[in-house]
Length: 278
View 1 (cartoon, rainbow, N blue to C red):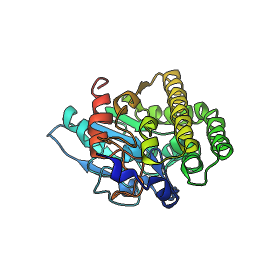
View 2 (view 1 turned 60 degrees about the vertical axis):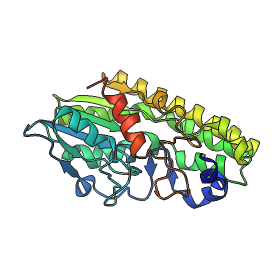
View 3 (view 1 turned 90 degrees about the vertical axis):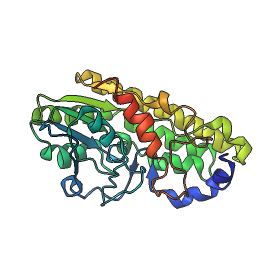
View 4 (view 1 turned 45 degrees about the horizontal axis):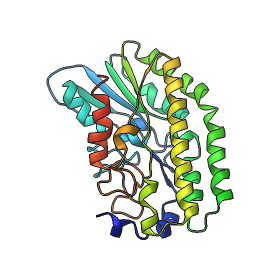
């Protein structure tokens, strides 16, 4: 069961204030090209490229390498194997939509056939919201203020996402572009038994609702630019924190990328969602 893993999660959250839903801060100045990983699956010359933040880099999947936190257990290798293509992973942990546009897209090959990406979570101060809502000293006012700030920042996403997607299309005009969403991070119904306070549990419900709004904003932004949006939250239902079969890494666990998918989350969540769109 998951109980022994999560007994002290509230106390540990202060140690993971740099971690958030799909990103880890601190690498904003690292060029994505320096961390590119490539994987050959068959003899084909077609190219599949992964862009975006840590959820596309595979951070949390285990075996991460380089400052960009790329993992061989991210969703990219699974998709490349299904397509039988050459994989180029340009994604980097901590990147915003503007950084994807300026630091990753310039290295995108014009002949790329398929592009998948996650971006937007780093634009909306999600780390601060998680910390404010889960800290042992959290108050309802602190949590509500941090979530409200994230929601305010979401109003700026359509413009920055549009700029990013226009740059992607200009660099690889023949590519199919698939924009992935984010999962809900919490299973609030499981938290009372583990000693979470009512304020913390209420905070996780607010965070889940904000994640829904983030996904809705990204979906609107993608579809407005004639790019398919790929939802993943429905697949992660029942597998968030805390659960008996988690697809996300716990704070304080062996993998430092808390609230990022583990290998199962990337395979059965992200890769599984994408197979219907390829």
